[in-house]
Length: 381
Ligand code: SOE
Image 1 (cartoon, protein in one colour):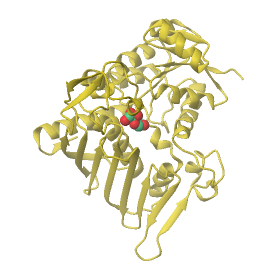
Image 2 (cartoon, helix red, strand yellow; image 1 turned 30 degrees about the vertical axis):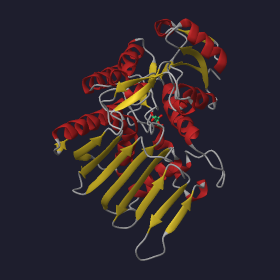
Image 3 (tube, rainbow, N blue to C red; image 1 turned 180 degrees about the vertical axis):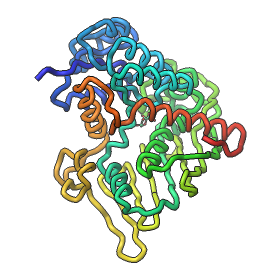
Image 4 (cartoon, rainbow, N blue to C red; image 1 turned 135 degrees about the horizontal axis):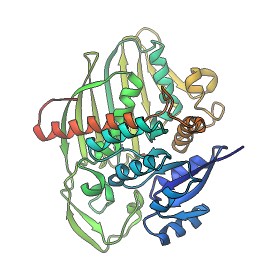
């Protein structure tokens, strides 16, 4: 079997997660790693066991590389995705697709005209239970959707001493909690329900108006391990917490709350979708369980088991019931679908995976949310 050669750009928190997921698929070879300097690329390639350590521009010229994963800080996503498409390679970009809506729009057009495979890593769609909720809803098990209540809570930025590039708008964009984790929640909301958000009303708060920035770079999540030393005080202009009221195209309502300062909530997405036939509640901390609320019969508690799932959701399960799968499996399952398309050489007409168009949609909603917070008013999407 001819294996598809892949390059991964960036080695922070998420780059190695992509590498591990790619390595669990039989038809892929992680052939090259790119970093900001040759030294760092070599060091990380040796650590991760990747044969080629390259600068981004040199990797683009390497004809053997067919697909590239962009796992760099947000401000680089646009320029790097554009360069990858222009070099004729397929691209998987981390979310958010860009930091500006016009950039995302340009990328969607470029990707469409190239015919190349384009995907955005909205990996949470690939928890089997998420696809189970989507397909149950498509089969009519929820009925009409009355309301949606979502939250995504974390604590890795809880303390004033917690620091990361995501706190700096020139690297991360004008929104933080909404762009970083709200994007996953809003993507999942529309994906599972099939509804479109039509209007938003947002209110943000920045709990830590200043933070203590370590004098050396700190990778995502690793700040928790630092000692309280060598910090300088910097101003913070992005939100730690946001509440957003949502209006949907079926005339009903919902809300999304995100926070990166909720003690004890490590990385918890929770969604409750109330319908005329039942009510679904799913939490990413117990991803293999679904609560199904009923009015006229006893409530149900569904556990992940391919024999109990719809065929579409069972297709995302690699192990029998009772054998838990989790966060790293979501990327593997997503890449299985993306690389089936790459093996065919072009973007499918109806991709099952999140595309640049989905990345654009999230950026649009995010921009409208920021606008709504600034105006303290409802804003149409
Ligand atoms: C950091 O908040 C982060 O790593 C996000 O950027 C990811 O998308 C999410 O998986 C977990 O948290």
